[in-house]
Amino acid sequence: MHFTKTADKTSVTKGDKVAYTIAVDIPKYPANAADKSFYVSDLLPDGLKIDTASIKVQVKNTETNVVEDVLTDAYTLDTTPTSQYTFKLSVDTSQYAAGWSGNGGKQLVITYTATFNNNNTTAVNSKETNTATFDYSIDPNFTGRHIQTTASADVNTFGIKINKYDSGNENTKLANARFDLYRTATHDAGNSVKIPHTDIYGIKLEGSKATGDNGTAVFEKYEANADKYDYYLVEVAAPSGYNLLVEAVKVNFADNDVDGDGYYTVNIPNISMIEMPVTGGFSTVIFYVIGIALMLSALAAYIIFLKKVKAKENR
Image (cartoon, rainbow, N blue to C red):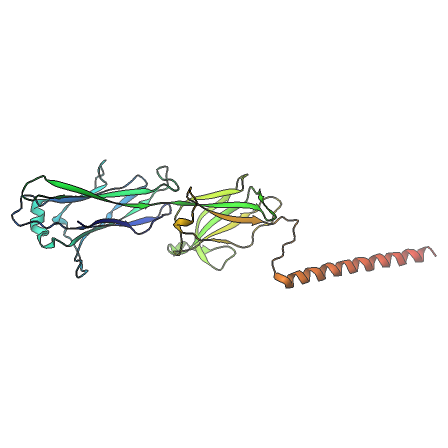
């Protein structure tokens, strides 16, 4: 019996939706069978809230790939959560005879969406697992002889960790640097803004997160973006005595790029104000050298001039 449960993503951001698909082969029962009943149930963890209005029930012909909606009177759908299930789709013997006997061997496909919560029931690097159960008659000549099989799907959530340090010494960690987090505008385009220091439009996710004495700050409960979109970290306040970053830091990572605790670390150095930033390449260095030489020449000329004036006064 083919029975699967899949999600459209492996990691998820707080507040985002996950699309789930349950697929199972519809049992074939003889016309005179005493028990033609089966059910499919699904139990979601506390970290996911189902949208019951999104539940769709269809039949797929695996040979032709034709998918058809199932009439609601062909099954019973219970969306009142219990300790055993979040929802349960049941087909009794009479419903099977009326609406399912011609579908034996095809696939029952159930799809729905659920929202990942941002509350204490979820945690970085803690899998949110929901499990579907398929219960069906294995001896249709007798009532109540059933077997069950299960299928599960996991989603995870990760964190983005900033490691802030002095550009001249990575062991010197910097506190009180503040960052905003953006992502490129893949949806919610109406709320998009231009990401500072870029020509890219995006969504502001969180603001003014400060590094601690250990130089770290974390943005928690975000999905691995990989090739979906980009995150951007924008420094809005520099540590005392350091220059503010004038570029946004692009962040992109996959599920397997996080550490054992579920965090992806972004190393971001700061340049002290007493350092001379050299960002324009060799030509910029030449201008700095010429400028310093001119200043020294002017100073030398001024000293010579003062000496000449003093010499005239002493005559």
